[in-house]
Amino acid sequence: MSNENGFLPIDKTYGTRAMNVGSEAEQWNSLAIVPPITLSAVFKQKASGEPQEFLYGRLGNPSRQCLERCLADLEGGKYAFCFASGLGALNSLMTMLRSGDHILCGDLIYGGSSELINNITVRAGVEATYVDTEDLTNVEKAVRPNTKLIFLESPTNPTLKVTDLEKIAKFAKSKNLITCVDNTFLTSYFQKPLNFGIDIVMHSCTKYINGHSDVTMGVLITNCDKISKDLALIQGVGGSVPSPFDCFLVTRSLKTLALRMEAHQKNGFAVAKFLEKHPLVEKVIHPGLPSHPQFEITKKQTSGHSGIVCFYIKGAKEAHTKKFLSSLKMFVLGGSIGGLKGLAESPAHISHRQLPAEEKLRVGITDNCIRLSVGIELVDELIEDIDQALKAAFE
Image (cartoon, rainbow, N blue to C red):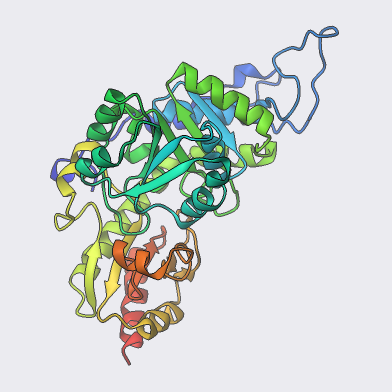
């Protein structure tokens, strides 16, 4: 789908930089082309009070440094800070705020993110308002004198709504507000929010960036010197850092990220087009389809889309959804995305189960809503699996 229908061109150097930045053999005495795993928590000092490049594992580690350098480069950023999970990254972002501050959040974000903000961040005296960021007017109306941060996802989880990032960033700068975009669904391969003026990009590296469903990690990336100093302090003192082994695994995974994202995109697009014509499907949401409400914005700020597809089974009966999910053979029922293997879930009962019933209904998370994370298996087999499960759901 990349470069079709007017999408931004793919960065042709992306795969090469993912292979090399942060992994240069010259940085090691051994000239190893694969960065070694440095497990040491303590590093020898030249003299008392004279640490060398690394002092203590929580404050810095060669394995983590390799990964952070590469992640920053691929995102078009100067600084990257890795954390033990995606929510660990978000929680660290929230600690930049102070009691009495106010944040604006997109009205549809990952359920874990909203749960963190509603149940933990607010304990520190921070107020949160949720608005539909598709319409900038909603954001403008919701800003208060004490607003400090705008946090959103684009595309959203799970209904793939798209926000005009350039407009949001321009407005935020006029009000001296910090902006952060969760870019997990697209990765820097398909979207670079920093290029549109966004201050901070967040990822759950657990998902596409690692891509093998065997690491939990998060990252915050920025070009702002002041924000980077705050995040460095929060990372080092807060202590929510990933292990050297996990950093090694994600560094390894980055080397195939471009290839994987192309495969996910190809399969996801094929599945979406198939579902759009299926008689048992009410609606399909995929930003790469002309039927998507923000298709024109999507073309303006992305180079394509990942393997995430949202669709609604015909009829709003929960029983059809449960039967569909239980009838899948290749797709695994699981509450995550971005792995090599296809995953399927009912957002109403897994990823967004924390939301009140009326809020789910308002944002379109109904009982017949399905989120697919299309894997890189043979796409014809994936489509056959979806087709037989849909038919089984209505038997």
